[in-house]
Image (tube, rainbow, N blue to C red; front, side, top):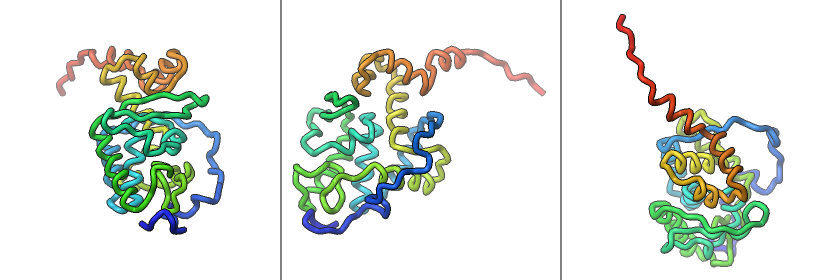
Length: 219
């Protein structure tokens, strides 16, 4: 990767075209990823410079549950590695919040921070930047995530918001109080979080049915 003074872009073709996807506005069923599927996607990022950057970006989406717009708007100063937190200055509705992130995820982000520093990027440039020091665009993310999924044989629809769904689902299944999940996701209303979680997986229904006994009849 070249320094921030060069004009070479490491993103894939189509990043600056502004093309509108043909499926814009179409709603799809929520598909939560398993931990194994997420790990496979992270491994598929590879060890190139932009692969390490993309691995850190996916980690932020998955382990902090940020919206793609929130993640791409981050700057290095917004990541508190020691405090295991990320400061979102302009969330939905231009609301600011601080979210938590686990130490293992911080390590992944720190690897990218160290690499971008070695390549001459300053703290005034976006955390997830191109070779020219500009913001990585959402259209690029919409392109590379499905490509990685295909590489590892995942047939689910893999997209940025899906990692947010997966984050919320895992918090719910780990028994994290709904109020904490609400603040982590940046929902103004607790009712919104309740609807959001019920849409992802009706926990009470799953737990109730999972306790049923069934003796398999012998043949």
